[in-house]
Length: 294
Length: 274
Image 1 (cartoon, helix red, strand yellow):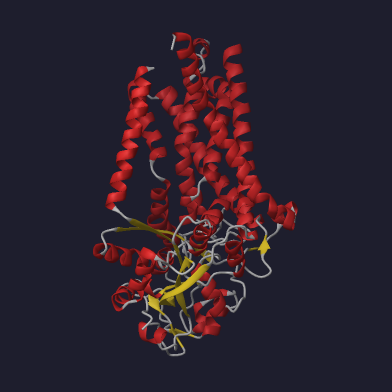
Image 2 (cartoon, rainbow over the protein chains, first blue to last red; image 1 turned 180 degrees about the vertical axis):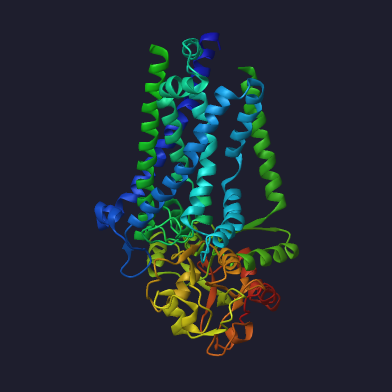
């Protein structure tokens, strides 16, 4: 075999590996929609999304996932209320205030939070935070939306800190020098120059953090309590979409309406996270333009 | 490309060696999959069975009754564990694919209604339990306990345990939406053990000192009361095979039904058939 053929051969192999993830994604989407669409034929998309009762195994069954969607959104919102201020403050501190020699080990340590398996967060929420919340807030149980929101907030932190810090650090040094040279203080420079420029990068970080929180399964299954009612407060148990799929899929008879309904939830979840990812991508594109064009 | 050729040959040789070794080590293999309730029985029985029959290799997986039966229908396992009887729809799917599921009753399981040991309530009627789970009773003082809200713990509605509970206790009524969901017997027991006002239900095999079983009609759940039929919340546990079992699967099920097999059943806290 001469070198030309050899090159072609290697190109071919690399090409196959390169498109394999696209093939996997396509396969997943096809299966998801093939298994999930029958439920929309059966009860209609609107009744599925807006129905308030989830009793999939009764006769007649109810397949309303409104309480599940609201639960997912509530715990994600709660997680962001906790993670966004903490995450962005950490990112600002790490990129502008912390001396570089410390940054090189503080950032990896925060990123290590992402490497902790979610079942460990679940255990912590269940055995430590749950009893603590029940005791301090005088609640009958600590397995509530607040517990899930706190755990998800902690889990979303590394994503937010890491990406927001990258965005803040990539604001050109000259901007900062110019601001300081004009007599701006460090605080004014950060708030009025760096942060506005990095806004879209920071937005990307927040949206990806939200994606992480809404898709998280094991932790919410363990700590959110799992009551399938429309959530009225952070102090009541809730059941996010992911927890429902995880808890029920193992026992649902294949091909039954319940089975299709669980895939239907998967479709809704997939669309939500897809939107998050597209938004994050748009934000990060506009950030790149901003930093490079000026 | 010389090296690539070598690599392919080496890979082929390796596969051939692995296949020979595999066939020498285990002549027959059985895959068991299904209900998490039956899982401990299947696992322990498989260990003992393999000790006495070194030519058989048994792998046991959980996943739930539905998953086990689905695997049997897909020919992905030889024995499906189930904590409920097979559904009509599942039989239909199976027959369409040329699979004929045969049930083997391997043990009995009582479902215990459990509360936190600190709760001074000791007995409830089936009706009171139903009213608690359907949301008509919300405080322990309505059933003779302290003034404390009841935290209802339920299983995911597709689990075999829920199905039996729903049929025997709730009689088809819906569990109130505010009930907490836990995905396994162990998780229900864990939450009840840690929550003062909680009530839950678990398989008899999961009873421990951390939780207190509730009396119904003056009867406590136990091996005797399940066997003699006085405990009202009890069910048989099944293993399903495709057609009458043959070979290793047959000897495994026969072993489980023998005195030695039923001893394993009772050792694990389930109720033997005889």
